[in-house]
Length: 464
Image (cartoon, rainbow, N blue to C red; front, side, top):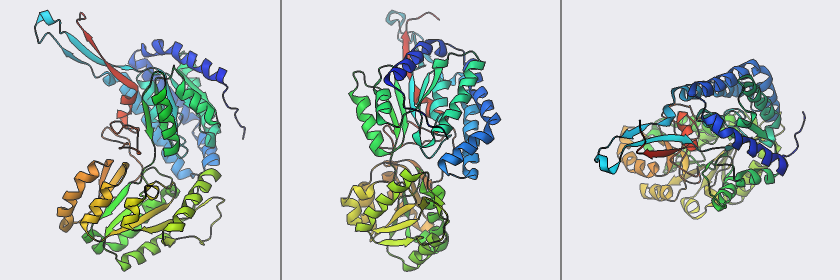
C-alpha cells in the first residue's frame, strides 16, 4: 500500500486559498445543484463499493459485515442530505412584518447562512461514516460550506480513494475543486496548522479526549476564535435496578457483555461502567460465563491495541479483575481481550482517572449499597453520549429519581436496552456534556448535524 507525505505549510495555505475562493460561488448554487453533487458522490461510491470496502478492511480489520453495513449507512446519509440541500429547509426562514409599527421599520427576516470553509478531522473506527464522506462532510456541503478533510493516518489509502470519488463528482458537475480537498498528515503539525488557519471557520473532530482538548485550546486562542465541534471520551453508564437484574440475570449479563465487546469495544457508545444495587454472586457467575463465551476480535491497529493494553495494565494495578477471556485461542495479531473490573464507590468518586474511557472491550462494575451511593456516583460523573436505565415495574419509583440526574449527564437515554451504534434520523442526537462533546446542543450524527455549519442572519427593513 502506498503512503502519502504530510502536507507542507505551502500546500495547506494553497488549499485554504482555493476553499475561500470557492466559498461564495458554492454557497450561491441553488439547492438542487448541491443536491446533485451529493447524489453524484453516492453513485460514485456505489460504483467503487467492492474496491473501497476491500481497502478499508485491509487498513482497519473491522470485518466485511461491519464495513458493508457502515458503507450502506454512509450512502444513505448522502441521499438524506441531498434531500435537505434540495429542499433548502436548512435555511429555517422566518419573518416578522411591522408588528411594532412602521416607524420602527421592523420588517425582519431571519435565515441561516453557511459559515465558510470547514475542517473535518474524522475517526479511526469509522472509515466511512465519520471520515472523508461522513456526516460532517456531507452536512457542510449540503449547506454550502467548502470542506477540507484531514486524512486519518491509520486508513489513509481509504481516505484517498474516497476523496478521488468526490473529486470526480466535482469535475463532472463543473464545481470548483476548492469545494472539497483532502490533506494528509501523520504529524500533529498538520492538524494544528489547519485548526489555527484564519480561513477555517468551523472544525468538526471525532477522536480522543486528549486530542480534542488540545485542539479546543487552539481554536479558543486564535486571533478570531471559531466553533470547535468535537466528540471525545464517553463512559456511557448502565444502571441496573434491583428487580430486573434479579429476575432476568442471564439475559442481562450476556446482553451487557455483548454491548461491551461489540466491534472489539471500539465504539463511542460502549458501556464503560455498570451500576448495581447490592452484590449478587449468581449474577457474577453469569457475567463470567458471558465474557468467556465472547469471540476475540482484532483491534483496529497496533497503536489502538497498545493504548488499550496500557490502560488495562493501569487498571489491573488498582482494581480486581472480575472476568476475562484472556487465554482463549485466537489468530489475531492485535487481540481485543474482554475484561470486566470491580470498582468501589469511593474509588469511582475520588479518582477522575478511573472515570475515563478505555477504548476497547473493557468495563467496570460498581456495587452501590443503597440508592444514596448510586446517586452520589451519578452526580460525580462527567458527561457521556449515552446513559442506560434497566428497570421493571417495581423499580419505577427509584427510576423516577434517577432520570433527572441522567438527563443532566448524557445526550441519549436508553430504557431497558444497551447503547448500540447510532441510527441516523431526524430525532437522533449524538452528543453530550463535556467530555462527550464540546457543545452538547449539537449532534454529529443525523440530519440535524448541519446546524454546526450555519449561523443565523437577521435582515431588517429590506424590501420583499
